[in-house]
Image (cartoon, rainbow, N blue to C red; front, top):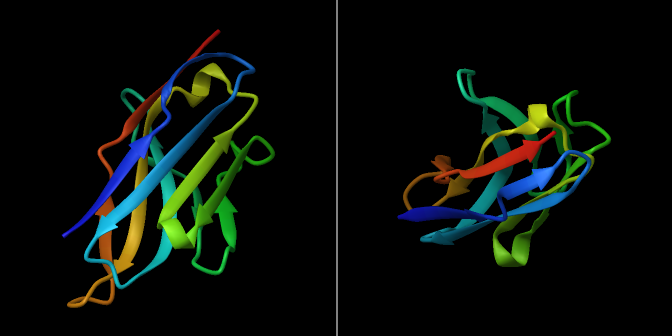
Length: 120
């Protein structure tokens, strides 16, 4: 069993910063890509940023230049540094990982979500 536990969400004023963390635990052989997605009220879940095991990143146009994804492979942890936050960044942020276990090469795992609220 593999679990993702997120932390770091909260309430921040527009222009402020937050750092999200997501730690993977359980029967992990290796972790391929990790990423962050978000879902605002009444909207579909959307990709925020992803990072491969080798460190290659991809991010949504709406967060480019403001958000930075990184990971610590030794700790099985992915981070999302969010700067210059805007009210439209308000959403539940979900961590996602493509995990290899003893039994499967690709297991998609989701965290429980952490709420980020940006006030104007």
